[in-house]
Amino acid sequence: MLLVVGRIGRAHGVLGEATVEVRTDLPDERFYEGAVLTTDPTHFGPLTVESARGHNGVLLLKFKEIKDRTAIEKLRDVLLMSDVDVEEEFDNDDEFHVQQLLGAQVITVNGERVGTLTDVINLPGQDLLAVQGQHGEVLIPFVLEIVPGVDIANKIITIDPPEGLLNLGGSDGSI
Image (cartoon, rainbow, N blue to C red; front, side, top):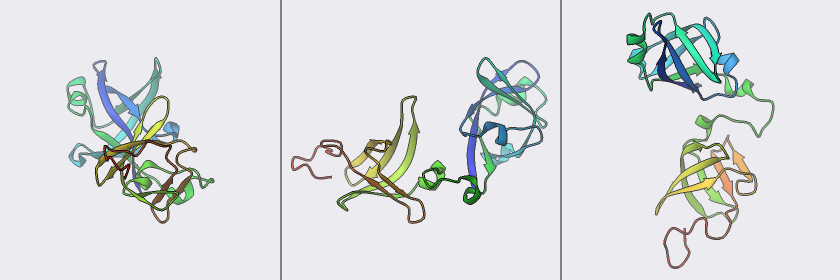
């Protein structure tokens, strides 16, 4: 499965290095010298990692195909993707990639359909599930107390929402 592992940020220096917003828990396994990364949009890649180093807590990458600052500046906000075997990636059923969750149906523990998962928003304190339902988007904290079940195989996420979380303006309290 092709997974987003980073996003190219600002240019750093004049030799074509760039800051990278890391979107993987395994940066050392994704951004090593010689790693070939697919890009989105695809016409910017593939890109081969020439060097990877940390600088003040930020990952800096240099690509073999990019020779100077002007060239790397044109790649700002380009997504970097890596081909990952998700079946062998994790030993624990509670671990998964965001891309495996997208499109999942979200239901309550009582079986009521809430909507379809459209995004997982990564915040410093916790992640949020963005769910598109009949009455618009609702954001659900992605914590065990509220999301007790994630069934990757069947693409179903079960939630146990606290009172008021799903009230989207309906006077009858319906979802």
